[in-house]
Image 1: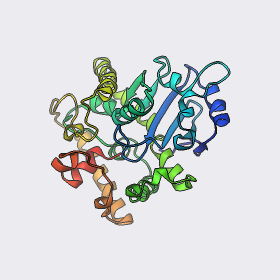
Image 2: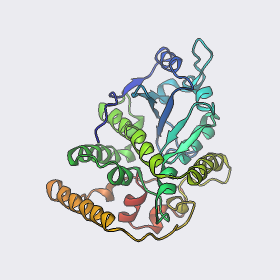
Image 3: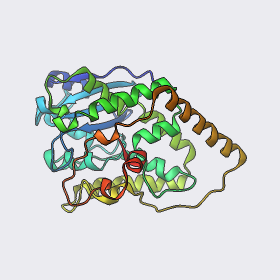
Image 4: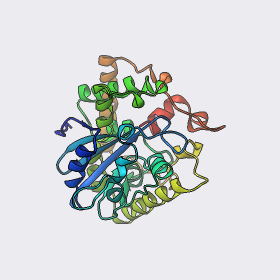
Length: 301
């Protein structure tokens, strides 16, 4: 499943930002992702990536260069990034909104509204096991069926930047092309994933996912919110029903395994996950209770 989304471009001036936000209206859906050094109330926000749908335009906003003006710069019709983020009539879709919402509220007092957390759509739309949340990588691998070379390129870009996170790669200026690519990669497949999950979810579970999305934002604003809590790898609805596989589903599962084995033969095993950077600001984190393989399988982003 290829994407025709345009390459990401950087916004680092108020003039560029004003031009961009002037074109955003309630007819758009924003697919968002934030990057920073230990993104949370305890860290920083360095970059904000926005995929503007349906135009399929990707912009990366340089929060370090713009500072407070990132959120206060207004267009001629009075819109700012803050007012857009807080407008419930403009849908915002993210993969795990929690630390993004935490950082925006703690550092700039920006409260996201109109949020649908696609990670929750995935979990709520599963026909069976819901104990663990999926990370973005697992969801793309399982549900979008990218060509092997496209998935390899996507994961290679992720791994390259992950290996640099301990050096505050998102704070490096000028922003490097590989960093822009990484940022774009975190949003370009979100529209496709959302479409997949909306097709397979029923009305009741969709309502639950939307309600939980809002609750996540509220939780992230709480003084007691723990950005690296060990429970964050767990879904909000427990195990769910156990489903017996049909013959067709079994055949699909076997075919998926065959493709994964072929990819492994072509590109080799992924032995670099131990090099990933995961900032732990407390006594316990998800990586303390879930082994490396399970953490990346369920919870990497």
